[in-house]
Length: 293
Picture 1 (cartoon, rainbow, N blue to C red):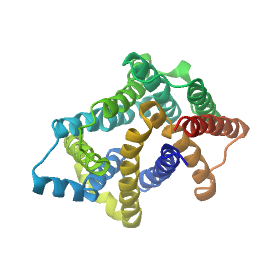
Picture 2 (cartoon, rainbow, N blue to C red; picture 1 turned 135 degrees about the vertical axis):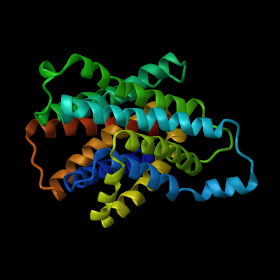
Picture 3 (cartoon, helix red, strand yellow; picture 1 turned 45 degrees about the vertical axis):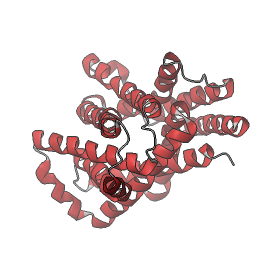
């Protein structure tokens, strides 16, 4: 099997597990910003071994920490800050819809940057996944565009833009000689420092103690996050930015199944139709990778 295919499935599966775990944490009193800080700090510290080995050799690739800082800022900190600011004003459905735009934005930016043009099969997968994801979000009954404040809606539209820029940047600026695990660690450590500053500014720092209310969930989240970020950076290198961006589709489908099986959530026919179309889109993407590699 082509290496990007299992990486896409594993990365999307881990992403899909992170979503419902975050929901459980918020329901027991952990703020979303604290949970995001936990993911960044836990992953950064959990994957530090390669960084420590690199530090002993003192052979940092050129631009290594610049890459880590920009990657963390664009892919993690800025999108999450917008999510926290916009979700109370727009609703979870509309904010979730913004994440489904990421593959389409990544595709547009990759073409503008002169990167390899995806095949017609890959393009079909991107747009089929997008259509299914939109239907999936609409099926939750939370999206009311006519009620959305235009300023916040415009701000929320920056979420997929930042995610797409991050996907492209990670691929184009990858420091020569750097490994996936050490880049994942460094990017999360720089993200954690920026998120910590956000916690201080927003007066949310004292709420970190709420993590002690769910120690097993906290530990499991750190372990899954470490695995997720290693897989993410490996997929970035193996599959490219457009292929990588489709982890959101896989994650959405997995989160839906986990919600039904483990969290007793219930969805209507529209949501399941959307999920089926998402799976068709993923199938096109997988078939394309098996064909060309």
